[in-house]
Image (cartoon, rainbow, N blue to C red; front, side):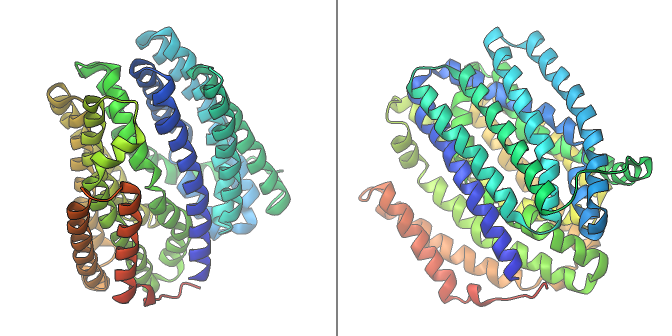
Length: 476
């Protein structure tokens, strides 16, 4: 358990620093120096390159971690053969990015896609080396690469904006930061874990791809429903790319704080879950329950607190915006706060499906979710613009949670084996409700900068008094 907490804290701290840095650039600086149309075009370019970049992974990342965790002595061979596949896929993905940009978007957006696409490729290749850190459960090295990459982006792009450079320059800085991430990831792998020489093996590629392809389809659907809304907004909303700005700013705020589920479940817990499923199935329910308990404890107060304070937070972050503009962002943030809370729980669900190698279930769940999300966006965006996209995201996350937990309870961990989650859920509901009532009563009298620490202290103190910090489980 100490190793899990250490790795979780390392990843969480690094990604929190990175997300807060991105928040400073995207939420604090950019709205002050660029118009809504310019910023909307930037969000479209980000969404498009993120979406197409999923082709570079092809579902190989989680099977790679899984196989290296189980066969550490073969790390360099799995890594090298995975790298061959990723380089080929990167060329294909980048070509699609350029073609899509040229045919569907303005020249300035195409120029941003050129650099953002290359940054995605650099980070995608670096992610393979990060798989080594996760397989060896040494997340501090990933944390260092994250801090270095995000630090370069924060200080260099922030300086560029302040000195009057445009969004294309920001995209170029993002590419430079991605290259630094790649160089550091390769260096740590080479000098701390394994030689980079490997034996090309059709059999190794076959083993990885047999596991990866079903997950590739699921991963594509997963990112599709996370990113397709931004692309559909620019085409379906009557407000055009301006709607992308309002939605993108709200999404960036929520996204900055959803790193905890990724750090715990897909970072620190994933190797533990994979190893328990393969070698110690009797301990798997305890590992799953441990992760889900903390996702419940963190996700519920996040959703309630951010939803209640959305108007106050938006007003503080965007002082140059008119009241009408602030309301547009705040409304989207109010809805997206609930999708953010649900992401805590759905991340645990998806981590379990991946760790237990439930490829078909994962792909079916992600495919039906993507279909539901696209249908909802087609209906809601023309009627409610960016708010419709936020509502679609909430419904989609709720669907993943309900269907995913249903499948896990029937096929992986029986409901009776996860009973300790129920008392935790009741405690979280009670404390979150009391915290929410307090925020509603006080927000007219106190600054948001006072309310947020008060809410955190009350809720954190409450779960400590109710004994949640005393719960333990040994994984070693």
